[in-house]
Structure formats: structure tokens, C-alpha cells
Image (cartoon, rainbow, N blue to C red; front, side, top):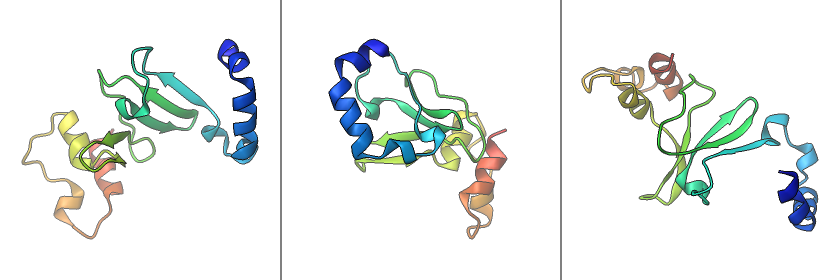
Length: 121
């Protein structure tokens, strides 16, 4: 990382000032690239907002699901936008049967919070 910084020092220092990174929360200041060298675009990784920072993982295996606070973000090519996994997607990843009713499917007024808690242990 030091080598990358030295090569890009002017750009990085100006960017840090422009976006006032010193005022960001601690977890927003750490960026972990775990997607490998062959992936060069965030759109092709899974993003997790963790207490320790922002982590980008390879899309070969899905990252650990942690209820309510670390639902992975993926790029939706169809809608050309970033989004969180839905509660149904988290249930599908864990092999819940298709007929298994999630909390937000039983009580439509409830937020996804309860469904994530139900499917992510």
C-alpha cells in the first residue's frame, strides 16, 4: 500500500482534502480490497459495510451474512444502481425453502430489519 501511495501521492492528498476524509467516521476511512488483481471495478465485487471498514470481496463466494448491520451491497446491472441484498435473497443463499415465509411477507407493514434478523444468524 505504501508503494501505491507514493506513486499516487499528489492525487490521494488532494482527494483527502477535497472530500474532508478527516471528518469521516472511522469505519468509513478503511477500505479493504479482497477482490484480487483480476477485478478492477467495484461493480464486480460484493461490498460489505463493516464496523472495521468497507470491504470488497471477490464474487466467487458470497461473504458472511451478519444480521442487520452488514448486509452486502451488490451492483444491479438491470437497474444500473447499487442495492442491498433483499431478505429473500439472503434466505435463498442459505437454502431456505421457497415456501418459507419471511417476516416482511407475512406482515407487509414490517420493515426488512425483522426479515434479515430472521434469516441471518
